[in-house]
Image 1 (cartoon, rainbow, N blue to C red):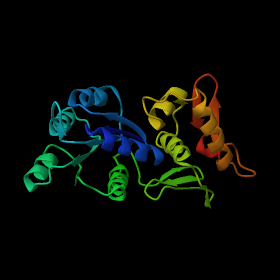
Image 2: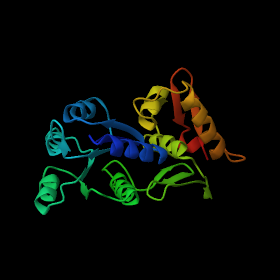
Image 3: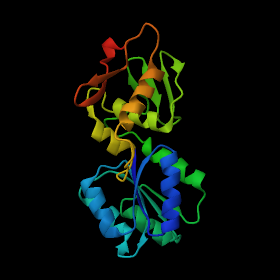
Image 4: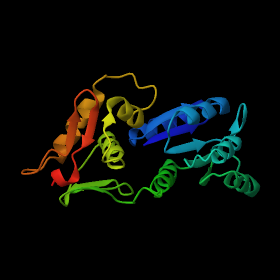
Length: 227
C-alpha cells in the first residue's frame, strides 16, 4: 500500500513518515499543494493524508480536483481547522474522513485501516488465492488454515500480488508500491523479501506459491497448481 502525506509541518510530516513506514506503508511526503498535485497525477496511491492549510493554497482544492477527474483515491484530511463548517467543506470537497489536530497516532492508523479496507467494486474484504487467505483488516494471513506470521513488508508484497493474482509483477513495480519513491537501499531488496515470503508460505507437499518470471519479476502460482 502506498500513501501520500501532504503536510507542511516538517516535524509532524517526519513523524508520520516514520510511523507509516514502520507500519509497512510506502510513504511519500510533500509540503506544498503544487507538489501534491503533481504527485497524484504521476503516481498511484491507495490513500492521501491531506492537510488543508498549505503554504500555497487550501488542500481542499486538491481533493476537489481529484474527484472532478474521477480519481477515487481515499482522502483523509488531517488539519487544525476543527470548526463544523471546515469539516463540512472538506467532506463536501470529496474527503472520505476528517481528523483534527492534535490527534493520537493510534486513532489515525485505525482510520487509515478503515479507509483502506473499504472494498472497491473489484475487491473483496478477504483476499484469497488457492489456499492462501489474507484479511487486510486484521492483517492475518493463512495457507491451508495455518496462520503465517509476516513482517510489514512481506504483508504488503503479498497483498499487492493477491489484488492482481494473474499479473506478473515487475521488481520495479513492487519496489515503488511497497517502498517509497526515495528508497535508495539495496537493489535486490525485493528479491530478498520475496525469498523470505516464499519460505514462510511453503508447506510440505505443496507447490511453491510464488513463481519467478525470469527477467521480469514475480507472480502467484496459478491457483489450481498451488494446492
